[in-house]
Image: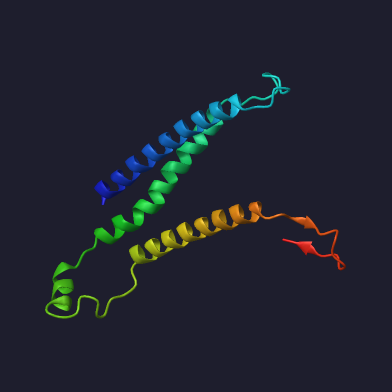
Length: 142
């Protein structure tokens, strides 16, 4: 159990550090494309200790929460009963819905919803929006 939690925390810390690195790169990129009338002293885009602390605490909390479930399940295996139950039969007979299956389904759901939002926002931005002044009835085009 300790090994699984350690792995989850290491991965979460690496993800948090990668996120901070992307934040620094994104901040520098956005700063290069700022409007010319905006003076350099008008905005403070520095990453202070509050941002660093929040990012690391969020990463560690996520690693702890999502590392506990697999670690807890792995800490109590009953391999003999599991092998006897599945010996010679259908491997999916009597199968319960496990936490891993729910997490995989949620990941698919989030991936599809993100794709749908991006797809429809792109197609919506390509259409002409607004009032149609030449029609007899005034309607709103989406």
